[in-house]
Amino acid sequence: MFFALCILLIGCDRVTKEVAKARIGDGTIHSYLHDVLRLEYTENTGAAMGLGERLSPGASLWILSIIPLVVMACLSVYVIRKSGDMNSSRFLAFALIIAGGLGNIVDRLMFHRHVTDFLNLGIGDLRTAIFNFADFYIMVGIGLLIFTRTRTPQTV
Image (cartoon, rainbow, N blue to C red):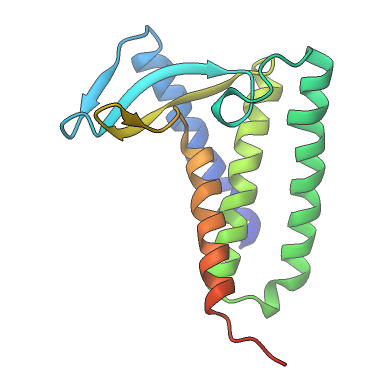
C-alpha cells in the first residue's frame, strides 16, 4: 500500500508538471481567486527558494539528488519496518514526504538538474516562493508529522 500511494502521488506530481510545461511554459502568468493563486512556470536548479542554484553540476547532483535519494530510500525502509506500529496519519505523512522528495529528484535526474515549479500563493505583495505539488506534499507531510507527534500520548 505504501508503494502504491507513493507511485500515485509521484504520478500526480509528474502530470501536473507536464501540464504546466505545456500550458504555461511560454511565460504567461495566470491569476485565480483574486490573485491568491498564480500559475507561473519556472525551472529551478536549486532547492527551496533557489538555495543551491549556483552549485556546480557535480555538487548539485550529489547534494540535491544522490544524498536525498539515499535519505528517501532509508526513510522508506523505516516506514516499511514500522508501518505496523504507525497510525494512518503518520503513514500518510511519510508517504507524502517520500513521494514529494522522489518527485523532485526524478525531475532533477530527467531534466539536467531542473525542477518544474508553477504554483504561487499570496495576497498582494506577500507571496510564497514558486513551488510544485511535490513541494506541497513535503510541507503537508511535515505538518502531519508535527501534528501527529504532538497529539501522540507520551509514555514515561
